[in-house]
Image (tube, rainbow, N blue to C red; front, side):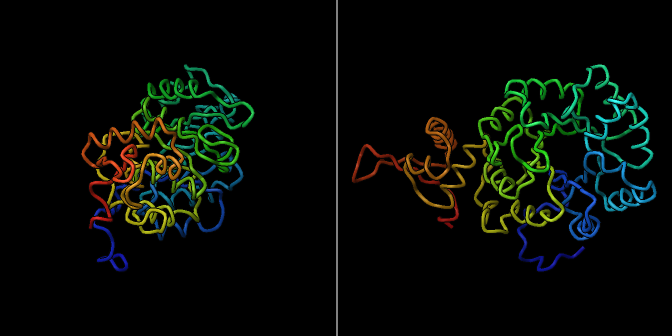
Length: 330
């Protein structure tokens, strides 16, 4: 398919290679099918939220699922639907009906109830034996009954034993007061870094319903970060952010090298690339990253040869950090 002004698009835009990194939350609102028609290349999975399928006439549900599937988009249940079935002793019946309805992705969560290990393995075995994708969601939905960071990491580790295609970190549809988000929707970066230290980033997806959360994730973790609970109306905005085609991440994909380091190092490199030389105090103030992490990240970047350290000629105690390669040098 020929894209509008294709010669202006960045050569590294992956179509459809990056599509599996975006999961859209379908709330059964108007516009989801039209978005799939226009921007389906950038949608990996559509999740029909929580228990919404139970409200639909079967023919309507089958038509909706079929619409997404014919466009190469995976379709997942919401974890709450399966939790509801499990709580009523109908887990396997639910799984069988999802398969018959052409859902090709099963989401297993414990957002409301705790599920016995034996039953989790049964769900995983059903998915694997039927050629279905398996996503496991970690986190609780009640803001007043949240897991600790250690508990979250432990559950991520045990979820990996189920051989899922993706481990999803709970964010709900609000992006506030759960897991990696505080009550105002700000990202708790110490949680994110710990999670990524413990788990392969290739199979971790962060639910990030707010556009500002999506932008921050891209700026700190890179354009390929897997994001879920993206609203239907945010698909285009998210993809332009991934490709540096919007103000917040303009030029991002050109300046970000392949750094084998944590998210803080990548974010600091991006800031230096786009805003110019800074001392450590200004980096801390600009990024919001604590001083110790900034110092460690700068050491990593200097060692990688992408940032240089010099002394201020007017104050030899003050060190200035400059990006070796970036937009300012092009």
